[in-house]
Image 1 (cartoon, helix red, strand yellow):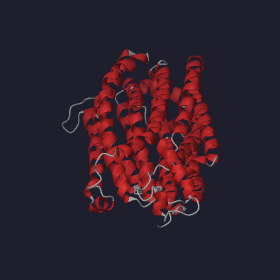
Image 2: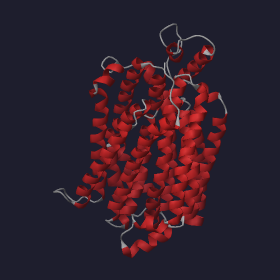
Image 3: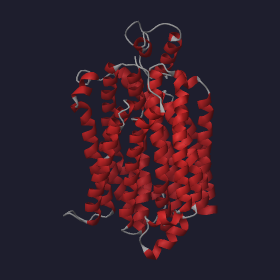
Image 4: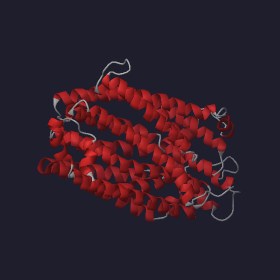
Length: 483
């Protein structure tokens, strides 16, 4: 079995399409914000509130499908195409169930937004926007599943093309539905939600369909013969993925409380936060993209029994991310007003929004480096199937530190104080994950199931089995299977 390539060239081959995918995803949010910003400060604030609370609902299911990447990567590294095809099908069943559950959450939106204490007009627009996004969540779950499968295979260029197609469709649909162009009705903020849902559904169906339409993939991974429901594999997939979903959900819950408190400061403060979050999302998505690369390469290395290469590949990804983040930080500190001007067009209120937003750029730059480290280490641990520690770290910091701190600080020190609470939260999480990463226990976890041949783990069978270290791998595999 060929060794997994961990050179800078291969890291960049995997990471660059993921980065470009996240650039398109970030650009989609920025373009949405710019388009909605043309409607006025109220609409900009409402969509910002609606977006963050919508992602609170979606984040659990987004994370629930995240474990597919680790399974695909490890089976790919262990040269087990038969099990890889089964993972795709179990992931599809999980995605279908998730889509139905997402849609069923739409009725919770009015209650949740009433808790924010935001102005009634802002609540109304945010509720309409959020409900439409949730009802269209089915397309997102299919898109996330297909993304994770291709990324686990190291074929990150395919989701990249899909992401840019989604961006183009989203721009077209939003332009038509927000402003009533191209013969469509002018729906305002609701048009932004419908445009996003339509784009992600079309691309999600197409991307997932490409897995089955391509004969080479269908034959190699036996997609035509591995469709049966596998309770054991499905259970393992859920056990590994569930902590990711819980982590995302609880983290977004903390951010939603942060958003609700900011909304009480007024629509100018909320609009400023929405604009700055879009700017911050560029750095955040960089970390998320590199985390995907870490998950893929760590999973492939462990599947191929190349444990000695795992930390080396993580260090190399960190160096790449640090350089890009530093460049973004310099840009943000040098041109904050020019960057913010892109999002604010209503001249009568522009100065109010800019006054709230401009001081936040220093906070954002501090936060970016901690966020990068946290995302990268979380992705590396995820590639090994070690998802519970990241979940507990995130939940503990979010709900025992961040939420109490932001509740105490925001009424006293306003918007700037609330954002500094976010820096403290991310710094604590990255430090705790660094402590976990320095230990060796996570390197001996496997999400692969045991092969039928002699009850040995799949990695041992694929590599010739037996020999020194096989007992260690078998015990690690059993640990992963039982919890």
